[in-house]
Length: 466
Image 1 (cartoon, helix red, strand yellow):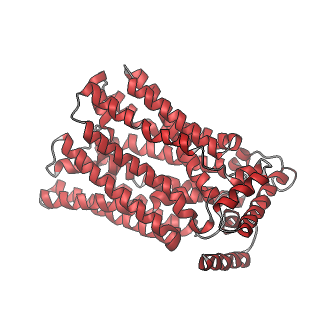
Image 2 (image 1 turned 90 degrees about the horizontal axis):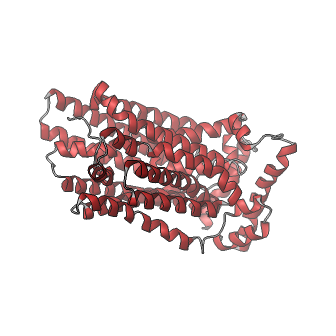
Image 3 (image 1 turned 30 degrees about the vertical axis):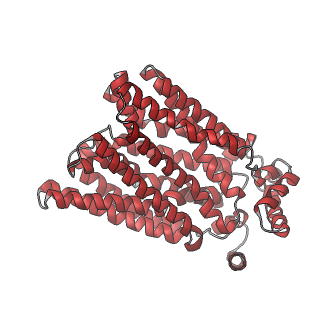
């Protein structure tokens, strides 16, 4: 099996830009690999911005910054200007991946929060799939035009956010934190079935917010949010281990490396032209998106934890099989066709298991486990961890492959994936069906085991009545 090439279909616009702007290989690797690290700046800023401006307008800010970055990249005459656009787009992406799950979690009813909070993941992958399709459609244009058109197309979907901001409400939990309970009640009346349910949810939110505002003189002293996160209580520490840990495991199991460099496998299977590689990548993108849609259907019916078990165990098996296939093929122990066939099946299997579980669920869990006073900035911390590990994997994968072979790299991913099974078992509670205010008790917060049993029975009754 050959070494992965740095210029693969997911980065096709930059492959064409490389030829048009005479960008060298090091610059191209920086251009492609820096996005994860750049986006963490947006995620960090997004936590504080969402507390100051609100969840709704932080979404708008994310769209504006991303559009500016895409426009700069589209018109870039040089590598330096292209990097400026990449910087802006990355910051916008960081804002978006942090705020979208938080906003959806805070406005959704408990019985369907998991499905709704998974929607950003399916739209991200749908956007990637549409990006692959547009890349394929425009790949026949001259190099000095096609990459600019590919990047310009990415501006169009984010424009729709301007219209969405005219109709979507602000988060009721943020409104309560700002002392705007009447507005919060009006929002809850729109998103609940009955007035009594809206009043019940408002009372729970006000109780949580009261803990935030009165805590300055009591339980939490004069500590700021970041002081509480940097020197957490045992309960908050357990939440951080769960929220940050699941974000890290989502990336260090190697999904980005697998997707970015899967064209190497397809190329060894006999696919040679760039248009054929793009078509194969579209197929993988479609597969990934379809299984995220399945996760949305199952997440509130089956629960977070069962899907995480299926996901992590399945990924472990696929990564181990992929590693074995690559190893045996390199030794000549199996035919080339058989080795590549197994490799392609395991790539598709790993993508499917990732998409039905840890892919979307990591964002769901990290947006719902933290108390109101910490939620936006703790979720931002999880998003930063996700971006850092993603960037580390993307920028180190080639070096790891050269050091221990491609087979060895995927064996390492399989071992890490096996550890993620243990992590899910020990640190991730089942949160489906519970309100955000109830989830704190699962980590040893207010309320003991008896309280938790009562809450769970109440949740079952709500689900039955639904």
